[in-house]
Each structure stands twice: as C-alpha cells, then as structure tokens.
Length: 203
Image (cartoon, rainbow, N blue to C red):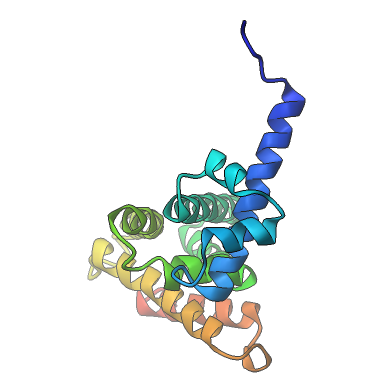
C-alpha cells in the first residue's frame, strides 16, 4: 500500500514545523542558545516532544534552521531593495546597507541569534552563520569591484569585510541598548550608510 501526502496534509505539516521554528526563534532570541531547551520549545509551542523530533534532530538542528531561514529572508529583502534602487551602483549599495540595518533592527530575536548567539557554537552552526555573513561581504565586494576605476585605492575584499562588520557591530550595539534609549532603526541605518559610503570615498 502506498500512502500519499495530500496538499492539505502537507500544509498542516509545514504549519506545525513553522510554529515550532517560530517559537524556537523567540526563545533563542530572549534566553540565548544555551539557556533554551527542547522542552521549553515544545511547551511554548503547544506541541509535543515527538512532534519536535519529527521535524528536528535536536536543538542544534532547529537553531540551524532558524539561521538558514533568517538568511533567506535577509537575501529576499536585500534583493528587493537593490532592484528598486535602479542601475546606479552607489545607490544600490546605500539601499542595501540601509535595508540590512533596518531589517535586523526590526527583527531583534533573529538578529540576536545571528549576531550574538550563533558565534562559537560548533562547526555546523559556525558554518551556517559564516555563510550568511560571507554572502553579504561577497555582494559588497562585487559592487566595489564595479567601482574600482573610480576608487582605485581600495582593496574590495578587505573593504567589503569592513563594510559588513560596521553593519553588524552597529546593530549589536543597537540591540544591547534598552528599548527606551534606542534611536529609530531608520536613523541607525542612515548613519551606517553614510559612514560606509564616506569610508570608501564615495561622498
């Protein structure tokens, strides 16, 4: 006998997985990786231990899934912003950095997972985290290479790392401040964009 998965059943399964994943993201962002446990995720999601292990092998697995999904969402937001910026490379770069800062600031749980919690958690999670950061640096490096004739003194590979590092360090600082003391995400995004563009001599 062959059991077939209907579209409706597939949707329910995906909804259940997303519920577990969303709950895990919230708990990881609030309590950190080490303090969050599988029983906490199961209880907060209203699920069961069996259901959790149907979708994820362990805590590391659900954390990796959270990182990967956030990386995909960042990429989608950046691609949309760059497309709207037109053909000018500098405008694309400004749009990308402002979008990245704003997106991270507006998704603090996921941002904390990426920037704070994912460091030093073992080879798999480190590779996942580095993959997200490296993809941003490669995009900046590509843009800088297109500007090389106007900015000949720059090493695109090195400068791209400085560019991305300023974004993540600024958002880390933003997240560490009490909410009442935080400037708006838009203000932070504008400051970082101006800093980076001035740093490459584009302003």
